[in-house]
Amino acid sequence: MTAAIELDRLERRYGERIALTGVSVSVEEGSTLVVLGANGAGKTTLLRVLATLLRPHGGSCRVLGHELPGAAWEVRGRVGYLGHDPLLYRDLTGRENLRYHASLHGVARGRVAEQLAAVGLERRGDEPVRDLSKGMVQRLAVARATLHRPDVLLLDEPRANLDPGAAEQLEPLIGRVSGRTRVLVTHDVEGGLAEADVALGLRGATQAFALPAGEVEASSARGLYA
Image (cartoon, rainbow, N blue to C red; front, side, top):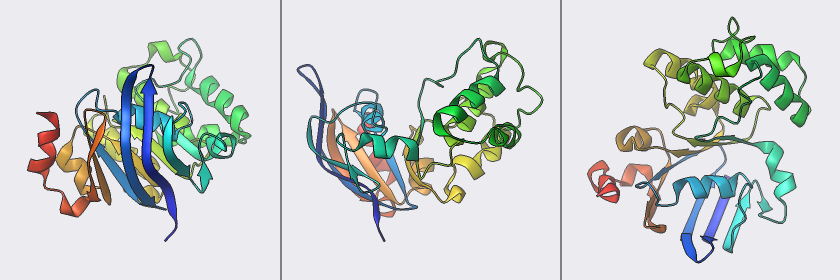
């Protein structure tokens, strides 16, 4: 199998503060990496580096065979990033937001209607985002992140604000069944380990472990949050 993501002693700083250091892990194409750790451990920073939103300051970071940050332009159109910020314009409708992102990625407009239907918002697509519930905004953010059929999904608590029915509806887009390479940040230790192939534990911006998910005991992983 080909590695979709390869990290070797990755480092990222904010001024003098180290946000990540010594992170080394490999993720094969079509596999899922779950990233576990307490708030401030570096999980979101890692996603943002992989999404080309932040530059690494040390080590090596390769995504889809391209070294970052030098080949960031080769990677951006092939990753889908779903962070805490939905990256949606609140005064635009859901349909207008997706059309805007479709234009950025050179995606046909017909894809917008498909995505609204896929996340169950075809009847609410012409309402301003500011008028939608948190759960609806999260569904729309999923539609945005997967609009361009990315090869890699970078997911930061992707099921936040979703009821079980909505979460199940989104599985074909962001779940394991999507067949995409995924990097999943979650505080749900048991659930994250169950749907992952590889587990990365972060503690205090440093790698605590990088192991096959089946070799990580949930009780041990919960110690990252102590």
